[in-house]
Length: 138
Image (cartoon, rainbow, N blue to C red; front, side, top):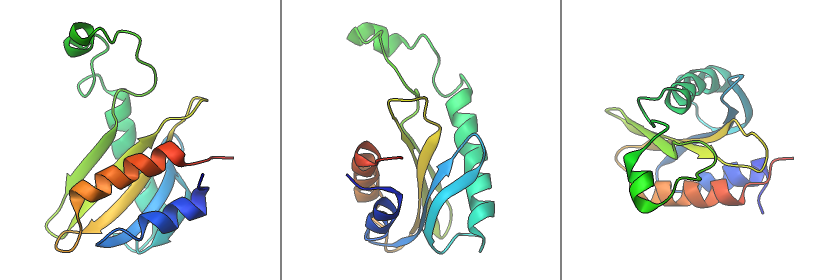
């Protein structure tokens, strides 16, 4: 079970990884960061990505409470955040935000910045999902 530092170092082994962070989306503070931040400042990047994450997690436009697909599947007892991950693409990169579900009321996400030409978006999504499930926050 990786901690924050191990998780970030493992994320940076992905093809095209330029930077990674674990961020608290309620405060906008980075719990840890590694690599290059897109704008040159890890704390600014953490605050800005937290704004995006907070919007997706809190606004009903992204995940209505009464999702007809959940009812059709018989999945009416869902817990946690309705959003799993977010992807933002730019001309030069991919920005991935993966929410971390914990036993307590978590407001943490993994952030990964990938180079658009050398990054593997599908692999990155799978690996971030795995990392978010194994991450130990103490």
